[in-house]
Image (cartoon, rainbow, N blue to C red):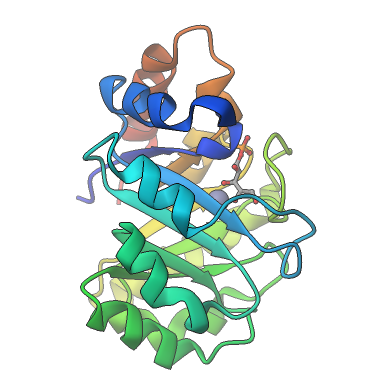
Amino acid sequence: MKPIKISPSILSSDFSRLGEEAGRMEACKADMLHIDVMDGSFVPNITLGQPVIKAIRKCTSMPFDVHLMIKEPLRFIESFADAGADIITFHVESDSPVGETIDYIRSLGCAASVSVKPKTDIEEVFPFLDRLAMVLIMTVEPGFGGQLFIEDTLLKISSLRAECIRRGLNPDIQVDGGINDKTIAQAAKAGANVFVAGSAVFNAQQPSQAINNLRRLAEEAFKW
Ligand code: DX5
Ligand code: ZN
């Protein structure tokens, strides 16, 4: 059985104290830290880049789960690996060649992951599955935190889990967007085991309790 992992998204944290926020998530027993990189072109928003990641790398030993929502990921993979990324996710809808980008991420010693937006067919990642440590299924349109979970994406999660089982593969399946106490069980039941949570963790009165609770709900619902 795949372990359940909770990856708080620092997009919802206090950007004036990013280092402390990263340390706080580690103390709250998050499994990794989700870092959303947006270029204002692939998505209609701009967030942060390599120098900021490098700076917060000193504040925690948690794995960095870097989600690149950028147009040309291949050009920047090396600099994100150097900045301290452990997992690098890029989008199948980006302008970079998918197979080459995966191989490059792996050659730098990072875990490779590919993401699909809500309207993209999950079959687009199937040719690359045997080289991927993780697949990220977006459960909102990428660009902003605090949006509502799109239920249509549940079907993609279950078809991906079924395809992996059929081929004897076992990548992590991550979901990102609108994950909360209700939606986490739906996504886990469909076959996801890694959960990004921005507002559900950072807006909670007690983030450690929120993380515990999310993990428990996912563990109860995940039967794969
Ligand atoms: C959206 C980002 C998400 C976002 C999730 O484009 O990829 O990681 O921070 O935020 P919530 O959990 O608030 O939907
Ligand atoms: Zn994200």
